[in-house]
Image (cartoon, rainbow, N blue to C red; front, side, top):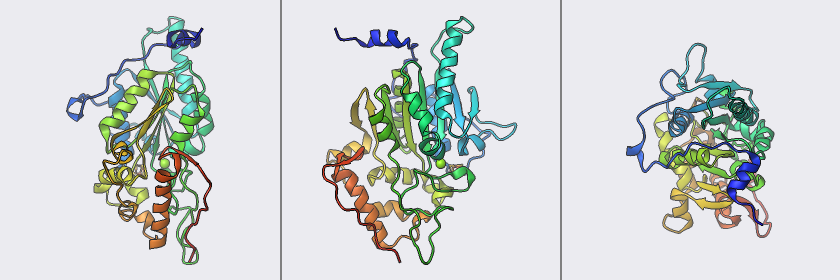
Length: 350
Ligand code: SF4
Ligand code: MG
């Protein structure tokens, strides 16, 4: 006889979660802030906006755990913090372990009657260095444990921004970072395509019931992804792409527009995978269903100083790789398998 969802929940003894209904629009957002003044992020920092909206979506009965990175260092400088909810630092690669540990501790304390039994959100965040590189094993391990309610949010500014913009596994092809400065002999110092974290987490973790990609230029979609992840429960994962004026080298006033261009150019597809069902969201869905034409990647790249050394060939190559995501991947924009392996031709150096 098939096991139903309630029986499965009893089997893993999953605690109930807060029921967080989706917001209907920006005008319906609560006015309360749980990430306020007192932080020292750069002007135009989208990752700070992610923190603010993430915890606004989660509400006051939330514990936030943060691994080392910009959102740790800039938000909790000695004797000052922007966090209104309980917050704890954890080591650089430990967002997964911290999330699982905090969720397990709460469960144990409630079981022993040492604290009130109520649904409390546990969110652990990490940057791309702390998540896609150093912390990937702990995140993966956590996503295999269906018995604990916790959300891991990876804010991806595409570099180790906190320590002066070194390249990470999430840095885009060809970008100028302090580890990949373009030279006269060799123009492109970074040859790897960005890691596909959300696709990897969704495809590889059958116990994880919710994975989403978000972008704070589309705040209601992003906040509703947080609310859905926390409501569904078990271990969940959200990957956010965050324009970073310092690392991407642009005027801070452009942050919002760059976030939009990342999506409309097709570089950053927005989607969620809920109980194994993939749903494209927002403008990504419009692109996939033919209502919106993808904007040229050139418009996105040319606004950022980290790509200022690109030649036309480099831009064309970048465009061809994004086209490949949409035209050749078996699940366009999400899962990078191709029906047939084709030759990859990066531009010649010089
Ligand atoms: Fe934000 Fe980038 Fe500044 Fe870090 S370096 S605080 S991510 S804008
Ligand atoms: Mg980073």
